[in-house]
Structure formats: structure tokens, C-alpha cells
Length: 546
Image (cartoon, rainbow, N blue to C red; front, side, top):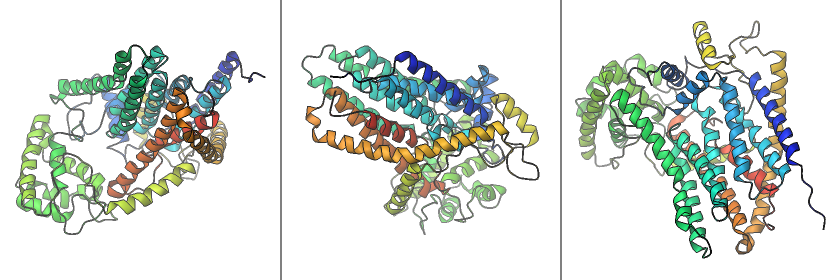
């Protein structure tokens, strides 16, 4: 019998090095897209936080924005600045590290060097690693690789749980790093939990059922490492916030007095329900009349420039995704955010008044501490429609240009500040007599290469998904006869597809209930690497043989 040919490890390492260098060169040709004027609560917020961290002032002087978002992205930018790594190169290096960790994680089932090299290349050249949304100075530049690290490392841990305990512990630690960092990057990091819980339970069941396995207790305990690291990261941020602001919290958007108050507002009944408006004008009017503490907001929310800046022209009212910002901004104008303690006392008082009003409302919903709009049956058809459109959007690789074809929304005085801090050029210089960004000849070559790569993914990934699904379906028919490793990889790949769909539904709900911006690749950024990894691994792995 002929032995299957494979590429020698030294040639794989050489090829991998060339792939990395070329990928870094492509990243070096891209330019950041700066939005301080149009994204003061997003890009500008994190940039200011990063500058404050470098200056040793944590998130700066307390105000209405201080505890509104999770701070890890600001820490990431501060780190890149201190070690003098350009912003886009830093994001690219993160993907390269994640790809290397993914190759290590899946090594028990992807055993050929050539296949491992392909998997590595497919991950780092995934169009969502260089798409236009990654050029923004915003947290979704790093959230997808952190989530991808978690999924791949968690899979690698369970694959090794019965045979390679040391390797399993390493993978659990890597999964913990991804999960911990993701949890303090975006407020919806909770979406990782279903995969984590399922993987831990499935791995635990296999360990318990194996009568010949030793060190069962340690194997089971090791599954808690991601939880330990995540809790430690959350407690660390909470402790720093307590040190600087005397408030032990990660953010007051996901819990605490502000979330309690806003959640109570969204539970009052509406005269005419609109899917995009959680606290409509009729509800606000009832609160002006029935909540003494809220009366002072009437001018700012109904007549001042705040309404012009935050209300939607489509609905004629505040959308769910903007009203809480308008509310906090108004509170700041009223002096409520002079200190964390004053703000907490005020929101507690107002929450009590709103809840008393809610108790008199026969059609009100049960109270809930959240900024998420209430779940209603009326959303279902809209979410399903948006989810289907999002699936097609992902599979057809829409919005994946390697450059931003709009000028940065930034003044001349700010350009130097951003570019010097991030060690990266912005697309601010315009083509003569045009509103389009200027690109040098080498940049145009790099962008053309990125476009070609995108078209390759657009053509191959759907076919690979189909081929992988056929292989997996055949394997499911004989699931009982498969080895432990093949059972785990089969379950894990199915789980990744399920998590991609779950993410699509989360974003679809927020689109129809709060965002109203259309399908945007940035919010689907974590879906693409799951689909790519699943398609590649399923095509390279013969599930019927060990």
C-alpha cells in the first residue's frame, strides 16, 4: 500500500512564513477610516479612552459616556501604541496568531502538513479579516478574531480531553483568553456561552462514560478554565472602575441603576407600537406627567438639539438604539453625571417612579434590567426575513472591499493626532477635483489582489460548504462507529454552523428592533470565520476513516 504523500514540515514553515509576510504587506497598504465627527459614541470614544489609558488616567474624567461600553478595545489600542505596532498591522497579527492556534487546536483531526498550511492560509486571508469595516478604529476590528480563537481552541480542548491532557489544558487556556477578552470587548459576548456549555457537557459525558480513563476529576475541572479566566477579566475591569470611579461594575448598560431605569421605561405600554421605537413619544409624555424626576428631561428630549441629533427621520422618533444615548446626554446637560454616585442615585429614584407608573399600567410588561427592546411575537417575521437576507449576504461575501471608498470624516487638526497615535495613515487625502480618497499605485495593486482573493472565497466557500455538508451527513449515518476524535470534530463543526446562525439571528433582531441601518458586515464579522473554518475543515477531513 502506498503511503499518502505530504509536505515536509520545513517546507510548510517556509510557505507559512511567506504567506504571513505577504499578508502583512497587504495590511500595510490599507488605510484607517476615521469617524470622530460622525461616531462620537463609537470610534471617537474608544480613541479618547486609549489616549487616556496611555496617559495613566484610565477612562478619563467621569461623564455620561464613561461606563457606557466595555473597555478592552481601548486597552488593545493603548497596547499597540506603547509597543509601536501600527493599528492595522496589529489586527492582522492577531488573526495570524489565531490561525496558528487554530491549526494547533485541530491538529488531532487535520494531520497532514499540507492541510494544516491550507487551513492557516484560509483563516488569515479570509476577506472579513481585511474588509472595509476592519479599517474603522472600532472594537469590531478585534472581536471576530477573539471569538474565533475561543471556538477553535475550545474544539481543540475537547478533542484532546481523553488522550492528550496537557494539550487539552493548553487549548482550554487559549479558549479562556479568547472568551475573557471577548467578554470585555462587546456587551453581547454572552453569545459564546451556548458553545462553551455544550462543549463542556459533551466532553464531560465522554470522560465519565470511559471506564478506562484516569484523572477524570482533573479532566472535568480543566473545562472550567475559560470560566475562571473570563470571571477574572471581568472582576479586574470592575475593580479598576471601582478604583477610579468608586463603582464596581463593568458597564452600567448591562446592569445597575441605569439599565433598571431604562428597562422599566421600555416595559410601559404603547398607544401605537412601532418595531424600532422602544420608548415612543406617548410613553415619554406619560412619564413627564407621572414621574417628577423625568419632567426636567422634557425640553432636552423634545425641543433641544439633542432630539435633532438622535431622533430618526424615518420614524420621526427616537429609535431603540439611540434613545438611551439621548437620555444620558440629556442627563449630562442637567448635571446628573457630575459623579457616579449622583448618577446612580438619580437613576434609582427615576426607576422607582417609572415602576410605580408601570404598576398602574394594565398592559405593561414585566420589569427587566436591560437596554434590549422587549421581545414581541410581531418581530418574528421581520427577524426571519432579515436573517435570510443576512445568510445570503454572508455567503456572497458582500461589503468586503479592502479599502474604504469614502473620505474619513475628520478635520485637519485631528488627522495628525489619530495617525501619530495609531502609527497608520488615514484615507483623508482626496483625488484632485474629487471627493474620493487618494490611493497610491502600490495600494491599488494591493487592493486589486484583495478583490481577487474575495472573489475566490465567493466562488469556493459555498461549494466547500455543500461538499462538507455531504461528507458530514454520511458520517452522521454511522455516528456510533466513529472514533472519539471524529465524533467531536463532527459535533464541533455542526456547533460552529449553529453558532453562526445564532449570531445572524441576534443581529437580525437588533436590526429590526433598534439599528435600522441595513445589513452591515461589521456586525456579522464573527460569522465569516466560522463558516470558512467549518467549510475548510469539513472538506479536508474524511469522517469515515481515522
